[in-house]
Image 1: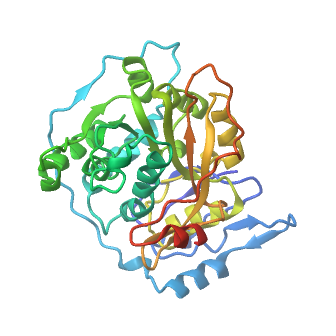
Image 2: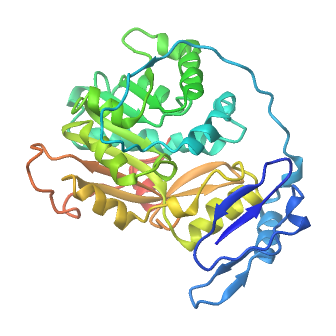
Length: 375
């Protein structure tokens, strides 16, 4: 049910809670360190669980005082960027103006590794190997390059919803020719500026990411079947018309190309962990970052992609530790999870058996493949 929630100096937000979740705002909600005593969530038996004690215990266990958070000073950034003229579709769009405005306000904070987007910085420890090893596994990377410092040399990668370029730059340092797109012009400006300041991208043979302020629909219209890989990491839960978004991502792929996704499951656990704990208790993320109703279960996501002929190679859960700010692989997909899917060699071919050729999860930095698979 919709409810109004306010915290600290944040504006009052309208939210849709999971079915069965009740809230009755009180004055305690307006305190920055509030544990939201009136929030309740459903249990599997159908009864209501008061989560106030859960919140207090969780905060005490991790030893984080949300009242100690300090504001980060912002600065204006002006960079010339490219954009497309428009999408000649039938009036459909994946862009949610409220989401664009939300992330535009975070533009100057993208490269603060200790700030509000630090979980995304930490996630590179998993998602960079996910893309690298996934492309090696499909044969997109020639054998001589597989153990080199630039295994993705020459491969075209589209980073859809690139934000400030947090994933685009590491992929470009592996040799990929990255095109990062985002609907928020402020994000593109920050990404383009940071790429010019990254000395690691100035090495011979490397190409800085190309950033475009456009939608995935526009890119698919301008450059269909042009990319060896498409990455949409932590984006799907922020777009409108998810089926159209996925269709456009698939249209960007060359035959045999790879689609890499990370997103959130729509479950009771994800509401507790990704919204209640991360946004309201620990303040790891700004309040209102996520809408639980836009989370998508793995089975539903795979069904949408199978309709495009995509075959599943990997599905694995991801777990975030707020104390160490580290991500690890897990077999539990109830909160965050990753998928790697492959387009058919011939677009007219039927999809393969999704369980026929699945991969183990790629290792995080410093881990062996065996250790990652057992995480």
